[in-house]
Picture 1: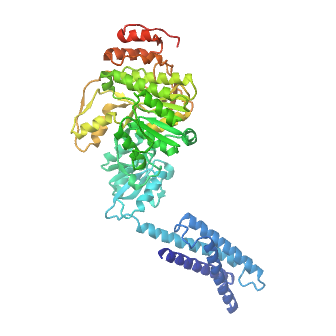
Picture 2 (picture 1 turned 90 degrees about the vertical axis):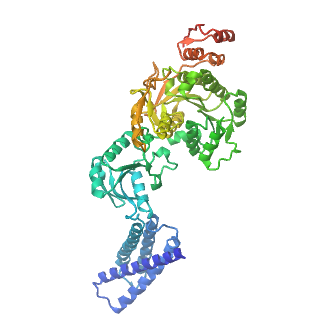
Picture 3 (picture 1 turned 45 degrees about the vertical axis):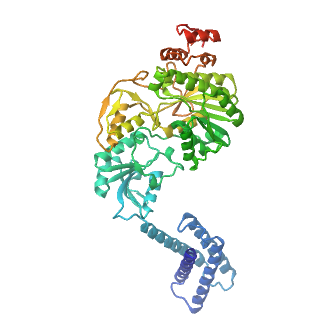
Length: 617
């Protein structure tokens, strides 16, 4: 009923606009000197025009609720209706011998009528938008940093929520072109240097960082200025965190350490990605882990024919499926409970499910623990990867998730992941399909991240323990790392290791300081010492590897020397940690070659002093 009432009101308004427009056009044509006959013919012309407009508007669905009020679609429909009406009235007027109204009246009158129709709609829209603004007495006045697309959407979202928590009173943007402009009526007050003055002038107590694809350095700088001015600081997520790449007021949140360390804009070749994922059967191993679960979430956006999630942790599988569809029906065939150490089961899964694209993310990754138990790295990271590689014979694309610790490795984790890179390169050379590795550093927020330990220490009241004042690491958010992994898989060639560029290394002590600032209570920071297998500074490239970026500015391509699987089959995972670690270190040396027959390998398990012969590789 309300919709019908609005349609009738719009029709009445448009009819009145035609009446005013035609009457004004005729009056001015005759210089306001109308006789009785002219007055009657003008009245009849107005009535006929209104009826004709109503008929055409009805055919255009203008008065049947198709268009949003005062939307661009309605403006287009109104304009087309007025144009057709004016044209038909002009044709009729010229076709009648008596010429009821001047020929100029339909043209001039139509222009006046259109202006009046649009003006009424504009004023009504302004009134509705003003009435939907947040209540100034309850909403928090805020400044928005960023007048780009995200800033426009966020400003409009804030202004259209009557019960909203935020009322934008100013916009900050570094682009000089934006100065003195208005974003949905909110003035642009200057660049980042104007934040303190803008806060004082507007009475705002919070700055909302509304650049969804900003680099972390910009977030840190703007936050520093804001905090120094005594105001609060909030952010919208990076685009990689958003489900549909659209920002709304509900996305505004407190700043996190990931915002201060790991945000960067990533260009994506969607056509290339869709080409190898859309409509394909995709398998992710380690799907319940930090990287694997994010891989599943992002891969699902590219409409694979089937997304298979494999893990040995049933609770982790339940969690990742819940994040995907909100139902977590564990009887869904997309969920596969299996252990990579069970070679027969893995081969059976591949034979039955026939994946076309494989992302191998399953691995043990806690460096100190693997230093104590290197045999577990052999069983899972090396033999598990070899099992998946051999079962993947015939797949179109295989992506091995590696780590920066594989570059010039000195730890069991680094050794084992370097060996998987070399095994992947061997498989690439031995058969069809594209088999490659992707190497990157620490991901913020993963279960093995230093942030996890720091958060636990903060929750316990401190202190936060840093291994060394000068230790540095590369950091990237999980979303950004996975985004680049998917992109890298689209452009990589078989046998390569694709190295994700992660910006400049960050001092762990600085990470601790930033997190201490965000903590609700004061937190002390203490220093211990580097643990066995840890480097003071991580590397992305090993000795002799060249940083080449032929296809993507954030992805480097390095060649990996292959390693024959026979070299790892007879490793003794039950030997002492020192023996296992020494054997893994020698396997990472591409200039040496192990004896390949079983008898020698058996002797090697008993006597690790047996040497290797030079290799031509």
